[in-house]
Length: 356
Length: 281
Image (cartoon, rainbow over all chains, first blue to last red; front, side, top):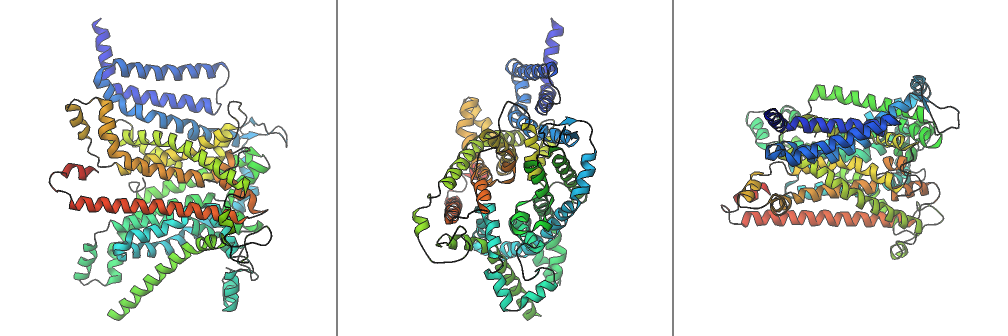
């Protein structure tokens, strides 16, 4: 009797361990079930385990007293969202990896069998190496351009905006209230061969210069790599500008004044005071710009030509048009891993506090 | 010396102005061409001014239908993701608990994964099972998946610094936990939750890549535009896009004005009495 009482008390005081454990077990069950890692009777057992764990925690919360309830509360609040992410974010990644190592029984089949088919990966690199290269190079150039355009704009708004600061910031965001696709299609018409921009460039004789710079090609602006990079730069600019603005806004302008009082030139004060303090913003902006840009296929489709396709175009084509799920999944997995490792290296250099 | 810095100052301002102009170029184009009377199937060359398109914004049946589907999907997914995400945010800011660091990192993961990976991997989950067919439900599931993190992080940022001892006070005065939540906690964290749900709604309406992989036969507004772009671009696309734009600007403006009013009220309000409230709100 007394041992039962002490046991139940011990469970109550360790309710947080129980809550966390239950959440993790439930998540693993959902991942395994969702990704169809197990099937048949094993799946039923797993479903039973899942139900028992959830019921067990509920019983503990109802009968464990206020202390246990307080310890269990955060896990109760987290559980719905976390289990949703386990089933619809983690389980899909698992099933993506599984399919990327599967083979199709025949060319036109939509089925696939798990066979540790690593050749999907080598095929992906062999056939779509250029697209990988395009994705990373275009995204990198676009990211640099967003810094070059976004930083000065954020700087002017943050330090010279005065009472118009919020209005100016609103103006930066407003263009992005129109649909992403419509904006991109609008660019394709603006840059079109006999459009306004090309004719202006032609009139002022810029065409030769731009062709020499490899921005224009044969008098064309649309359907060039430059147009794709320009579209990426445009569409992801706010993801760079806003974090930079936030980090600039936080800077105490007294620091800049102090640097001036100590006989620092304006340029030097910027380099030694403002720039280092805004690095976290540039860092967050770089990730927020590069990641979606590298996986994008809309810009390459509307603004590029068949020689400027990015990995996103290939994944989309292989997955939805060719139904070649294994190779498409392998490409997705490579994209995911390369971006994850980039993020990892990046956070090792700059730290993670400013990310969230 | 001084003259040079003045020149540099203006150069920077002009550069920033050009940046703003760059941001607005396609928008001006979209709004202007909503007043165009196009020749043929593509609304890309300026012909003549007309109000015709604005008089009949819903003339394109398939486009209007797609917009309705998008609004329905956005409404359903926003409600669910706002609840799920807000609960996570409350758990993270209200309690100190084992594993909160891991949860914080885990929440960022969906945001640092390219959309095409999220979309294609979710599609592999739905492939070859017979519980759910690709369509409305799978789109809603997909949208909730990426909205939850956004909502959780936004709400958490907005209720950082919330004074949770107010709950204690309400309970000491005899309020039940339910009443405390409804009368004290919820009203104070509601602005943050509303802001997050607006963001989630906007993300859902505009999502293309993830939806593209999980839509089946259902056509949302972005999917309709994507499909139409190669065949026909009716001016109604511009009209509806402009409408969404103006509506968002109106929401943004009313939010800004409400914020400014609140700020004004704060400074003119009796200072010592409202101290704790102004701090947390």
